[in-house]
Amino acid sequence: MPSDLAAGNNSRYRLVTTAAGDTLLQLTGSFTLTSLDRSFPTVTKELAKLASQSDASSLHWDLTDISQLDYAGAVMLWRIWGEQRPAHLLLRPEQERMFLRLEKSVSLPEQPRRILFLPISMLGKQLLRFLDHLTGMITLSGQIVLDLFFLMTHPGRIPAREISANLYRTGAQALGITAVVGFLIGIVLSYLTSEQLHMFGADIYIVNILGMSIIRELGPMLAAILVAGRSGSAMTAQLGVMRVTEELDALTVMGIPHSMRLVLPKIIGLGIALPLIVLWTSAIALLGGLVAAELQIGLSIHYALTALPDTVPIANLWLGLGKGMVCGMTIALIACHFGLRIKPNTESLGEGTTNSVVTSITAVILIDAIFAVAFSNIGIRIAS
Image (tube, rainbow, N blue to C red; front, side, top):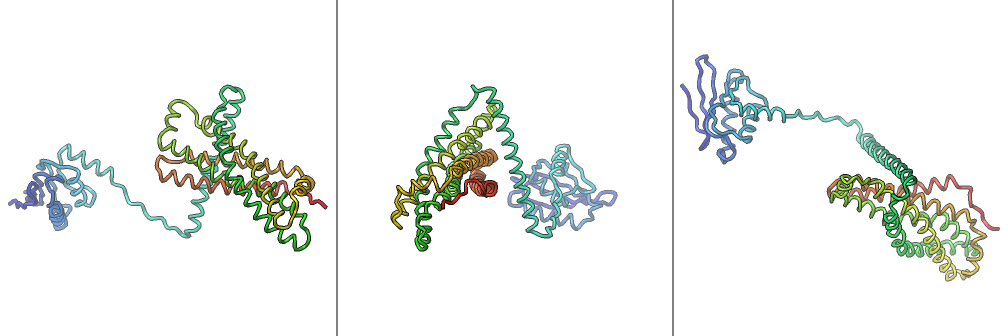
């Protein structure tokens, strides 16, 4: 005898005992999200109860009488079955295709990997990220070298306007902030050193300290750090916005290489601009230091300017300018690398700009340390 059980307004199921003595669960009606509506939890609970009470090997499921079945109903039955087909199942062809898709979409849960020592794991991830970025920057540098060789053989393709625009944005527009900061740094340095030298009657050596420290170290370092925070972040943000607005994709479709039109002009422009900014910053910082020295200990500015060429060899100036050129090209390369890696979303734009500035400042300090070690015996002479 079949046993009819109501399960919602438009969905029904019934238990039938076959001639072989097996239990057949026939589903009829509509098993869709709309038809089940509020009875969805009740139907799920009752079918799961029937499936658990019956022997899984002897329970037969018959879905051929279902008038409508959507993915909501199919997922409900799939979960009742324990995400696997029952041993005995009757389906129509369209229902067969639906459950085949569900079988393909099922993925086994990944076994959690045991982390024996979390700091080592984090260090390994950071090392892999560093190697990935280093590989990307080396690749970009190689492409820039190839572009330079191409432009040497095709002078008409040199992006002169882009280079000039970057030279103006990174050089001329940065003179104000570098002058203010350089002047204040010179005042602070002069005030601190002049007080100590005046105690020992060595006031004239303030020229040596200001000249060597500013021209050789502080001027290039100060200018490079300011440019990394100002111009480096602007370059990364510019390329990032072009990625977000799909301008980079448009350039690719038009056959315009990113490295030649976007990266190379920035590297050349900043490589030319930063040595000039270093010269400007060092001059303003020296001026601020000498003004503070005259007000603090009465050291004549005329005497200081006259004695400066004798106390600071010219090699220090060339060393500072060379350091500025290397730092400028490195800052532009890092900024473009991170800019081209930005994904088309605002969160990646902010993260990429921050990483660009931090990496650029770290690279500037590293370059300064390398120059200090490699040229430690060049241009150092104390006047007697």
